[in-house]
Image (cartoon, rainbow, N blue to C red; front, side, top):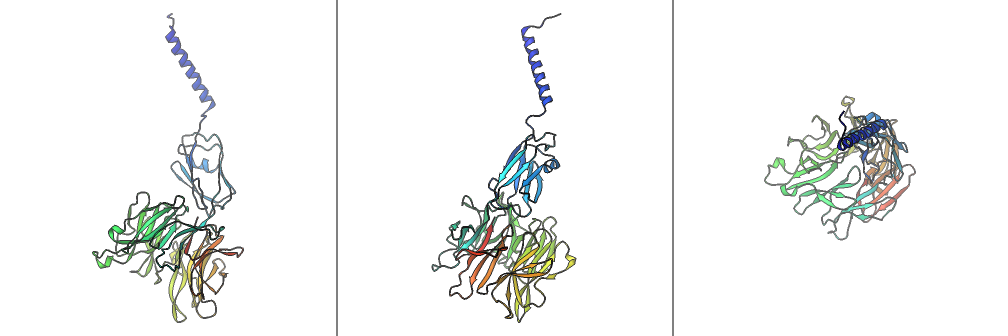
Length: 464
């Protein structure tokens, strides 16, 4: 028999060692397992969507069955490839430490396991308030800019923009990290900018001045990836039919591509707004005398006739209900009443919320985050109550109308609820003041506590 030389013996020994090692790995199983490659964001707002990215595609049920939150929170889960999105159904509790747990045993599509439990702590920041100021200045050249204030630190405001021309419209992003705003120019055009709140840097996202257009009234898609905005063409070389009327345009913030919402130029679109589920866009069409609501997936259109064109309308946060202002004639004058339709069940008809024949002016409908109540402003027109706008709440389940804030010495407006539904933000103007200057206030709904957070400011909005 032929004997093995030293080289052959070395090779055979190496093969035996590798084989034993391989058998050991197989016996012990996969020691690395599937990994969590990334979790974002690190700076969490009360509306932030947590995104958990795995090292490989996962078996969704095995992950979701092992997911827990403390304190217990109602969330919506969605998958995009290897990434799981975790969105609060209402809002994370501000300034409360939350813990996300994922127990071991979650399985990838290839069968590999998450071998160790995962734990992630986050504390959502409290919502802040953005507003425009000054509302009034002895120096008429002083422009209105964006300011930021925390309700728990009244009057400690920080200026966000430093424009020489007053900013005319703005909207915070759904996660509170960005603010889209419209910046007018000397020639009458206007551009849209996006401000990063943390860094303070702004970037221009449209080129409207180049084509002589006025771009304003931005509104964010729920995922924060796009803007819908109002664009008015000013170029005198255009056909008169195409000039000086608002149309709705879409802007993709990833590549700044922009285009009309509709290819038919006869369809107008003032004050466009996105539905909370991202499936619809509403805009006012002056040609039709109606709010046009477009289904983005099909292009289908629903029309709600109203001559009130100021954009007083609101989608329900969870279902197809839609509330809007209708122009009515009451008490010898034109006024506005609130009406509601169900976009998912149009055959159910129109419901008048303000009450038939009521001598009131109702405006600014705002749904509570749970969708059970409407908050709005009301003026009494027949002398039986305050002629200045006060704030009311309507419980739709039992038709109960409750005054929330009643002080006839003030005119209330620009109302909005924070994402939790706990606080109501507003601007107030003293009715009998020699110089009626608006100021910014917050009302805690449960306790009735009311306090001023900024003076000489207007159009406040919550920054989540």
